[in-house]
Amino acid sequence: MDLTFTKEEQAFREEVRTFFKENLPEDISSAVKAGSELTKDIMERYHAILAKKGWLAVTWPKEYGGPGWTPVERHIFDEESCKFYAPRIVPFGLAMLGPVLQKFGSQEQKDYYLPRIMSGEDWWCQGYSEPGAGSDLASLKTRAVRDGDEWVINGQKTWTTLGQHADKIFCLCRTDPDVKQQEGISFILVDLDTPGIEMRPIKLIEGGHEVNEVFFTDVRVPYKNLVGKENQGWTIAKYLLTHERTGIAGVGFSMLALEEVKALARKVMRNGKPLLEDPLFAARIAQVEVDLEAMKITNLRMLFKAQKQGAPGPETSILKIKGTVINQELKDLARRALGPSAAPFPGAITEGNLALAPENHANNAARYFNNRKTSIFGGSNEIQRNILSKAVLEL
Image (cartoon, rainbow, N blue to C red; front, side, top):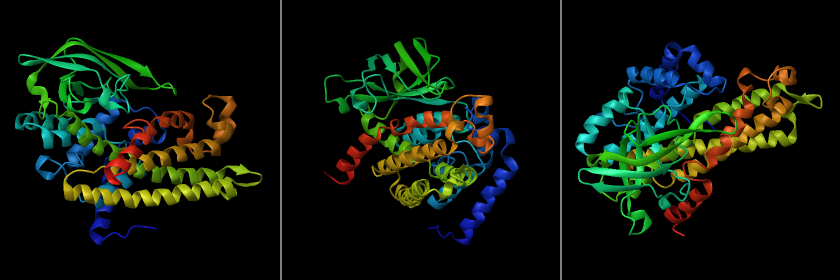
């Protein structure tokens, strides 16, 4: 099933294609295609290219510098950016903190931080999870105690994605330990160069350095860095997470990955026939393709709903669940198609088999292992099912 686009939407698609053909540097698209760990320089250069065109803050309304796209235009942009192997837009400032400040921030915070997010002057990371508070985020223990015109913060955050590149972090901190867990949390902005902050790298199973742990020891932050009201942090956190979970779905990237797996399965031979003709493998391909088409339509429905009501709703948990399941299934299908070539060993062990695969499958093992995280971060899929049962089905 294909969506039917208007002439105006088709013209917009051509504009997007032309833009990427003329403006996306080959070294950036090659790094994405190879599945390499992207450097800060690559991400900053890509953001600057989009910002110059006015296409960086895709979720922001025009009044704050966004492009003011319709949900269909956003869908088209996501599709085409993936086809050209453009990087994901780093979400922490643009897709998470930006919408939060627009809804809950003071005028002073909007005037100061939003232009700096757009220009790339500030690079944000997310201070949510803790060693004892992952999916059970409300049990967080990082404390912020008011001392005159300052907060004094002590505690630890973990799984802080791209924190090694960041200069600022938005944190959930416990500001009232004597009330119900969800009612004693505040949302506070922190400069990472403040004395008392230590960031340590966490090496992932595939060898990459993507996440970190952050320690706060008597860190003093201006009281005005509080976003919204004191102890309103849980409401703000949930609002931010609906934006995060919409992005995690990764519809465009899964569409591209599906085509890559099909191309791979046409080349790989099993029992004298292309793997794509194997009944069991073909059935798995068919199932993931059906699921992906359904998710594409669901994603559009939710984008339209978000445009109408000003923010995504709890239904974004559907996208998070299905998006990550589809993503992991596609990585597993690629791994199975490659067979021994998927093993993370260089040189003669795999050279012969890798000749069967497109260049961008060379890092398959790293991609497979790295993507095991997607059903856990942003709130595990088990937690998302609980959210749907309570907030949507009212069970």
